[in-house]
Length: 146
Image (cartoon, rainbow, N blue to C red; front, side):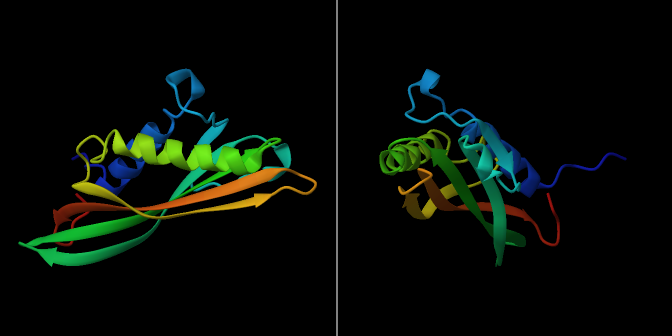
């Protein structure tokens, strides 16, 4: 018997595919050198990285199912001469691409942006860190991963 992939895994996989689509070649303002799931970013290399992490899930009962709200933190590191504007562009690109597929290929019911923040260092190394927190709502069977 083959096991079905847990729906949460499908959702994070679909999110990774969507985020990988951010590219100046596709008329976005940001290029990410790497898009990774749950990895620490080696900032000493001064390349633009984007990482995403599913950090928290809230459960409620809904018609003999579990409705789950999955919190995902998307964090990017951008290096360059103008980190503040790079950060603004990156946040806007993230918001725009999330708006292109708000159900992540039908794997979740809806996506909500919860917060965003930007932190820039302009002395010495010029870097901007951006963080976008989203909530993804989906349903599974009670006490089931699918």
